[in-house]
Length: 75
Image 1 (cartoon, rainbow, N blue to C red):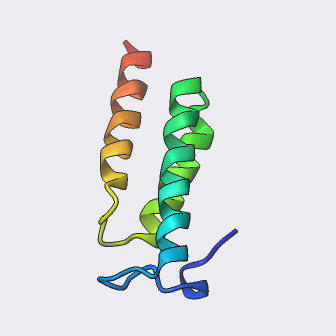
Image 2: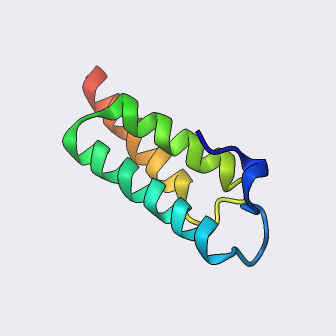
């Protein structure tokens, strides 16, 4: 698994490859949410938010969607 120290994920200007990795991770998390694989999606969103601590790519939005879906399941 990728760790924050392996690339510069915290820079205000991402290099192309770390930025591409983060966008891909966000897309995969979204697709898993759509497929109903919420545990996998949650893990991916967690990793996205770990690597993108400033939330520049909007991982918190996906986290909110996951929270709402979980609340709907409880009802």
